Length: 532
Image (cartoon, rainbow, N blue to C red; front, side, top):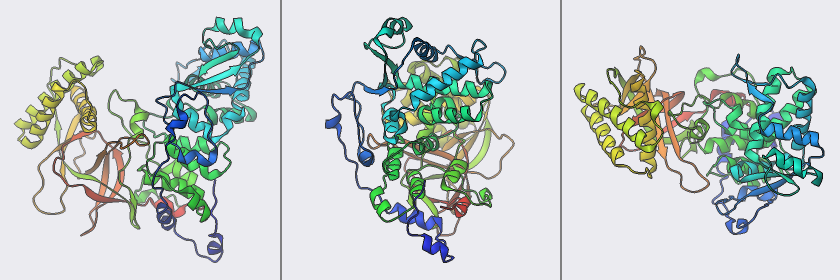
């Protein structure tokens, strides 16, 4: 995917403009606003938007009861039986040896091929091939329903299946259910059937159109690289429409003016990368990450995006990861500038000896969660007082009192801190180490300790730093932002500190009254090897 435009003459003359310079120019082409068309969407059951307008529409679905789309018809009882079995999970089971998915022993090779062929034919329908319908399906979520026509002679059999709804002459299937089961079948087929080349191509095609990320991604991964890959695998009248489609699906508030970028012959693939970076997506940027060989933008994005997130206990990992983004991003010559707080880590402490009345396993309601947090944090702040870390102990004690009185958590900051409190409490329950942190200062007397992080490396007391930032969503086309990254810090005299991505941490930070620090994450070294 690319359209490098008018830079070929420069390259042929022996000059290659640095990728970072091109990213800087692309970042200047931002849109001022998004057009909202909620009036058009009211009471609609079926909705079509042309590709050229995909980036200028924010789909507001609260007032829309359903999204219904037509698919390839079912033509026989055998096909109906297969589809019924897919939805009912008749064919797939857990593989006890590998903890992956496998086809059940009752599914022979011939039946497996028939199931694969039917899924391939269903997802080869035009609806599944268009980039804008990926957006409709992804954003529609549980509201999206697939309607598949069938001969009236199959009506009694359909109703006996009890999974296809009550619409006469139509099979009604939740799109999320269909995607999940199609993804599970593809994984099971790969694991047990030794696919031929033709079958492998069908599997790729099906997954490009139905992939359910909760089935295919690790809990530590972000979703946006998979979204980009799935959108790029679909057709679009104008390839540039893929950028706003990805932005809509990823809840990116910062939008590029793709019409200007296209008109000025900018690189499409580089503009996609710029969109990700401007919206705070995190990439590995250590000097040791230089690949030493050429990369396409797609390869760079796949290999260097940060993929080691760690969600708090009880959180839906992929949803949490989606919120892990920098805020107020600007491109600079030196790298990616953002704002937040830099913490210098200090002593490692062990909090042991608590005979807990509550356990994380028993946390099922908000009342149980409150009791769990308060019990463990009370034990923690008493230990901190005994160790003379009075300011941090006081902050944790004050927070415990706030939580104890909360009936419902509404404020984003309190809600976020409660997730971090759960992580700290569970670390105490499991006897894990904790490490204290204080706001970093260039010079002068150090600040008091005002943060505490879950720390796995009990023997590692080397100097370490953490970068944190937090910002609530501002509109419907946005998401809450939060970052807790252990970083390597390069202190440049009289300049903003340069930070290098290390790993994700969980912890509680109290920064009342502290100013936000401008920092720069230097450009990943691998960028200089990107070729368009």
